[in-house]
Image 1 (cartoon, rainbow, N blue to C red):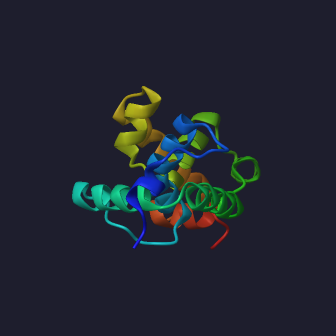
Image 2 (image 1 turned 60 degrees about the vertical axis):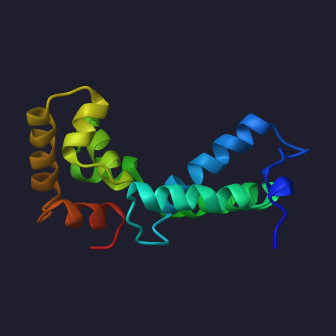
Length: 145
């Protein structure tokens, strides 16, 4: 059985604040990686955080690095995609948010624009790319259709 005190101690080789942030970011990294189809209800998130608190420091750092590499490898080339379809910078920001898992409404909040403006960007993205919907658009951005 792992020693809780040992797992909770700050890393000797790293900044304790950075290690704390890395542990806290792991659930989001897992979601972005697409490895697991997780339901992020509050109870599940709390359970994930408890698990990550028990992992040794080096395991947390290694896992975070691997997830970031996986995310980067799977990330669409937004610049090339935007150029290919004539996508504006505002439309590209929406596309990036959709790929991150945000909704159109959540993107509008994050970007500080109205929901109607975000919906207009969405409509133009679908028209320019010939996509049938948001999922089709995301697949195209990833080069899957």
